[in-house]
Every structure is written in structure tokens, then in C-alpha cells.
Length: 352
Image (cartoon, rainbow, N blue to C red; front, top):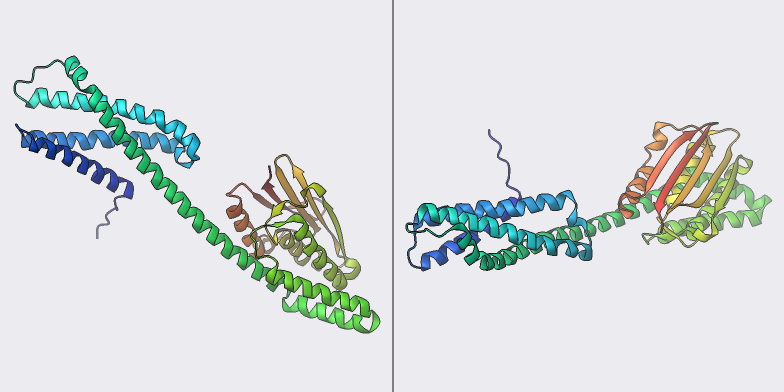
């Protein structure tokens, strides 16, 4: 069974648009005297071929230099002279076509090409600029509409993924092992250290509240993210005691910079789960946030080894996709094993 390729929307518009235009010109010729059907057919074929050729060459040039991705002002500075160049191409090809057809098929046509060009170029140029302006405007309006539609879709997708990350983070924080260990720690502290037990309950409550209600925004400040991480680390230290240490270094000038919620938290949680929790002696989790050229570099390091399950976890997959969508591919995430048994996770995001 044969499979037929569908004609793209672009080619449908090209063929239909220029066919209707050429049919309209044929109709005006039919209304006039000395109408020739054979001449009209040749004119129709010539018109459709020539004007599709002109606009298709322009489309190729526009796609090659990505004009369709430009903002309105720089795009306008390019398409205004382009329309006049297209108008001149329209003049040359149209008059050459008319001259060849009339000298070949119209009896008594003995005007020189120079005279024919001189008598008709102004009207043809005005018509060409008008038609090319309409075509170029329609072409870029279509791309603008597509870009806006894609932006809406990506924003909706980002919102869904952020919500999923929030839920996944809550599940990771309150998985049975973590939750029951935290409750057992609190239970042991109730008699011996009631103040510490109350503090642990407050931390667990704050983490639960933040996970449920505190990350609804697409972006939060570094300060807000670090406050949540400090609570998380304090609670985890009650479980790991001397096995867990933390080293935090944050550039104060970056405290109000907006980042993805739960991005650093995901790396810290991943480091404790896949690194420190598996080591008998525990270790130190190091968090560093600094300015690097025109970017912000976030680094989370912990002792351990990089295994396949570490790199392919659901939390890290979510983080990668959220970074890709939020920063339009301009953010980077790297997870690698360093010398001396250190695993390093790095996020680099653009910052003016």
C-alpha cells in the first residue's frame, strides 16, 4: 500500500495564494478585449512559478539567518530593504515574462524590450512592492503566532513539571524511611532533650508546609531556598548526628537572585541519600553559590561514588527539564565524580 506525503502548510499557502492571485489577473484580462485563453494559461503558469520562486528564495534566506526569531525592531530594519529588493526582482522577472510571452504569442507585438520596460516598470514595481509586503507580513505574522503559541505551551508545561517536582520533593522528604527515622529521633529526644524534640517537630512541620505551599512560584530567591535547606540539614543532623556536616558559602550579593525552587534542595537531598547515608563515617556536604562571569554557579559536593542510579534519578531528571524550559537551553547541569572520592553537582544559570 503506497504512502503519500502530505503537502506542508507552507506549500499549500504558496500554491493557493499565488494561484488565486494569478486567476484574478486572468479574470481582469478576460474582462478586457482581445482575450486569449491559451495566453491566459501560459500567463497563469508563469505567474505561479515566478512568484513562488521569488518568495521561496527569500524564505530560504530568512531561515538561514534566522530572521523569524528576531524581535520586531531588528526584524523591521531587515525586511524593509528586503521588500524593495523583492519588488525589483518582481519587476525584472515579470516584465521579462510578459515580453517573452507577448513577443511569442501576440501577433503584431514589435516593441523593443527597452521601451517595454520603460513603459511598464513603475506600475509593476508598485504592484510588486505591495504584493511582497503582504507576503512578508503574512509570513512573519505566522511565525510570531507560532512562537507565542509555543511559549504558552512551554509555560504550561513548566508549571506542570514544577508542581510534579514539588510533589516528588515532598515524597522524598517524607518517604517512610525518612519520616519514621525522624519520628523515632524525636521520640528519643522527648524525655532526654525536650527542647530539641520540640525543635525537630517545628523543623518537620516547616518542611512539610514549605513543600506544600511555599514553592508555588516558578522562581524564588536564593535566600528563601537556603532557608529551607538549612532547616532540612538541621533535621537531618539529628538523624546522622556527627556523621553529617555542612559547609555553606553563598555570595551575599546573590541572596535576592531568583532561581528555580527546590533546585539546590534536590542536589542536597541527592547528596545525602546517595553519598553520606551510604558511608559509615558520613561526611561533609558543601554548598557554594558564586558569580562566574555573566552566570551564577551553584555547586553541591559530597563524598561518595557516582553510580548510574544517582545520575538517572527522578529528581535530577525533573531538574534538568525545568532548567531547560525556564532558561531556554541557556542553563547547564553537570554531575561528575571528582578525585579523592568526591561527587560534584553543578548548576550554571545566566545572570546579567
